Every structure is written in structure tokens, then in C-alpha cells.
Image 1 (cartoon, protein in one colour):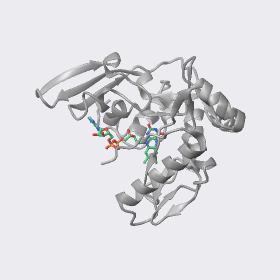
Image 2 (cartoon, rainbow, N blue to C red; image 1 turned 180 degrees about the horizontal axis):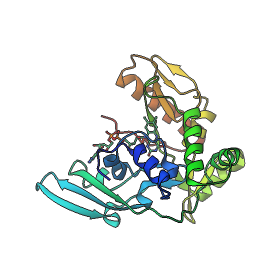
Image 3 (cartoon, rainbow, N blue to C red; image 1 turned 90 degrees about the vertical axis):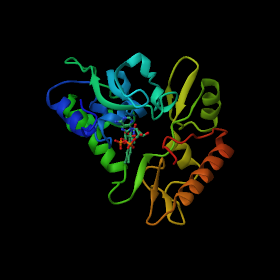
Length: 249
Ligand SMILES: Cc1cc2nc3c(=O)[nH]c(=O)nc-3n(C[C@H](O)[C@H](O)[C@H](O)COP(=O)(O)OP(=O)(O)OC[C@H]3O[C@@H](n4cnc5c(N)ncnc54)[C@H](O)[C@@H]3O)c2cc1C
């Protein structure tokens, strides 16, 4: 898929043709070329799980290269393109390995409930469900400017999550491996009282606390200030540091 293809056009094409793998990533804004950089992810799926290889131009050597998935070192919202190879390669094509026999991933958040509301699970129904959930929760960038999730879901040791859950039984926890889990950053921010708050021209979205929004005319400093205040208060209440998911320029 060419790097200039709109990501969601590709997802729509895959679903339409019965190829599974990217349906949970419906409606993520942006283009295909950025997907291996951020290893875009949503609703229990990451692009890296079905990226086979990446074609790129090495900007330093001026040569075309093909980079296999293992070399991309995909991690949670992370890849080698954010570290040693930052700004080194211009992605031109991404090759995805999709499947004609998909295993549906319905376990994340409210996906299963929404799918049941819409009918029998299928690629099309899952895409429709994800679009509905996203449209209901995420602000439209054209109406309320935002960069999507501002913070990553923090990864912590399981024992820390267990201790937190004793005090906050509703705290959502997503398993990573035997010793680590991810916490829902949006839940922590909301529980710290930030959901819907506005500071100057910057605010925390009223329906999704993980999204910082520009209410109109907010400066970068205002957004950064709000982000820092949120980080501090989440740390004071839960002892967990939030890391930004966005690029801060
Ligand atoms: C409302 C909203 C919801 C979002 N939801 C999600 C979500 O659910 N999950 C998620 O993972 N992200 C999400 N995002 C973030 C965003 O959609 C992704 O990061 C997406 O990949 C950005 O694509 P882009 O084409 O706009 O890239 P840009 O933001 O322009 O670039 C992102 C990075 O990739 C690099 N890059 C871009 N294209 C290339 C290329 N061809 N070659 C080399 N480097 C390149 C850029 O230099 C930059 O470092 C959301 C954003 C918004 C606004």
C-alpha cells in the first residue's frame, strides 16, 4: 500500500474484500506511511501485527531499502523509526499480511457490546462498531482541534496494578505479559478529576479524558502546561507517570 494512501481508505478496502487484520483500526486519521512509525493501535490491535515489510528511502544514503517487520522493532506506539532511525527513512510502501480467516478481536472496551447490538460478528460489523464507538467518543478534529490520545497507557508491574486495584476496583487493567499490565490513562485522568476541565484556551475532552483539545486559540505553551498539570496530579494520586503519545515539537 502506498504511503500516501489514506489509512482508513485502506481499512475500508480490506474489509470490503474480506481480508482481516486491520478492521479494529478503522477510522484512525492519517496516512499509511505513518502507520509503521507510530505502530498505530486501537481496540486490542496494532498495525505491526500485520505489517510484513516496509519499503523506504534512506535519506542519508539516498538508497531504496526494504525493512522486514522484525527489524522495525514494533512496540506499544513505538518502532525503530522513533529511535535510532528517527527522520532517517522516508516510508514509500507498507506491505500488510492480511488473512481470509480472521480471528475477531472483540475483547477491548465496548467493542463486543456494540457488535452484538449490530448483529453477527463479521469484518464489516466490527468496522461499523468501531466507527460508531470512535464517533461517539472522539472529537472531530475539524470541529475541535486535537491530536487524538495525548498520553500513552502506562505500563506498570502487575503488583503495582494489584495494589491500585485494591483501592480503585474499577481501574481497567490490560495484560501485557506475566509481570506487566497496561493501565487506562484516560481512566486515571478522569479519576483525577480532569475530564471536561478547561484551562485558558486548552481543555480535556468532555467525553474522552485522554484527548486534550484546543478550545480556540490555545498556544502550544497552554497545551503543554495543561498536560504537565495532568501528569503531576495523576502522579500524586496514583504514583504513575504518564508519558505523551504525541510528538511535542
Ligand atoms: C482524533 C484522532 C484520533 C486518533 N486515534 C488514534 C488511535 O486510535 N491510535 C493511534 O495509534 N493513533 C491515533 N491517532 C494518531 C494519528 O492518527 C496517528 O499517529 C497517525 O499514524 C498519523 O498519521 P499522519 O499521516 O497524520 O502522520 P503524521 O502525524 O504527519 O506523522 C506521524 C509521524 O510519522 C512520521 N511520518 C509520517 N509519514 C511518514 C513517511 N511516509 N515516512 C516516514 N515517516 C513518516 C512523521 O515524521 C511523524 O514523526 C489519532 C489522532 C487523532 C487526531
